[in-house]
Length: 238
Image (cartoon, rainbow, N blue to C red; front, side):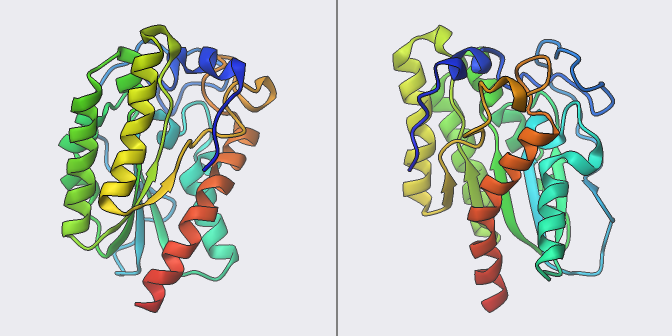
């Protein structure tokens, strides 16, 4: 389990994926303050009701792909990896910029309305940390998402985040521990920090210093793929 020690990371996470940013915003344009909006239709590279296995990526602007072309966001890159390795699976991007864990929970049923969802990537919490929302409530929201997915026999990949430093070390520590506790409690596949090797590195982020650029997103996708591929193999074998 890797530990994040980059000094610049804390600064980057002061606004970590506040995500009040739309897909149409150009790369490098700073994000506005966080906001929640009604979820748009789930977006996939090729809408498909064929019943082939699906991976739903539930998240905020990191998942929605702020400042990137649609083909550059990490769900699209995961789709490409699946296809290159011969997996007949579909990745559905259910990212909404500005989402908190509560907003993600509220639209979970919408996100899982796709046929034959086998894996759910949960990438939420960054906006909770940005706003200093109660850690115990974030934990309840994420737990409800995971439990609902498991009730549907959907495997979960939990992507951990880090809190900004301005709420103090106790909050940051409690925030980090939420993901570890949930991974242990529900026995889910766990990536301790989704932005590992990307956050705080100028050349891997857009001009706002917050959202990964296309190169940084490739690293994010690679980090997730290492965790996701065994899940896909296990689902295929079942």
